Length: 266
Ligand SMILES: [Zn+2]
Image (tube, rainbow, N blue to C red; front, side):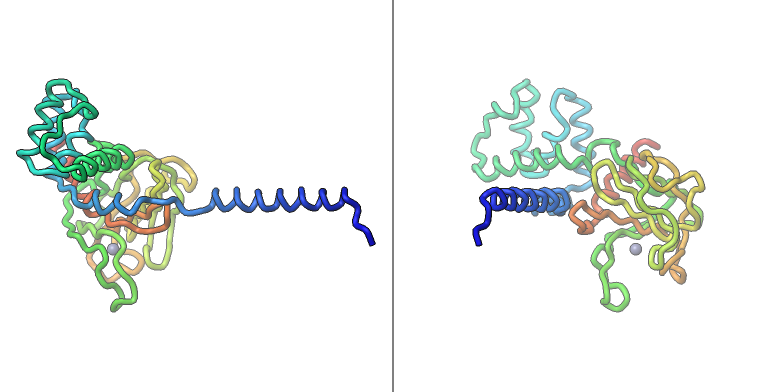
């Protein structure tokens, strides 16, 4: 039997369309790729360094804050000063005289500048500290939970029951209500693509609606001990899940956002 040529070409066309559709679907649904150097670098940045760069930026507004932070977070103060003196004389980053700095250090400053521009956690006052009231917390990310069955994927911020919890950033309310571990919890898909998780709330603000927008600083609910925190002191469990599905340590970011909040008050 001879198969007509038209049928073969028709089948080939259909197969090609199917393959293309599969490739496009995979591209749309593949987890976002986050370069492995991004979060390890961001986690090295301290509130005091951020504060220093904000102050330098206020004195010399023509030097980008991210450039100052990239320089200070990569090289010691005396070496940094040589570069910052040039920036103050209106020399641009691309025209700097790097002096004796090794090529890989210069490359690292450039890379850190790129990261700080793309990931704006440390950009002054862009994010809000989520507890509006007295709180204490430490870096407990990765600590054992349930006898080693799982790891702690966030920061616990302790305080008085009912202390106001507010949104750290603008975004869309993705989850709202009860779940077994989190108790009364709210999940916000931030404008930056991350998922911000607020758990163990005493109650959730009745004004919040799933699927609707929320702005940085907007009221989420009261601090509590619901879900698996039933027998523990009142605290907010705060988590950040990256667009690739991995949780990251929110502690370094919280420490900086908290500093901004305290600066505002003083
Ligand atoms: Zn927790």
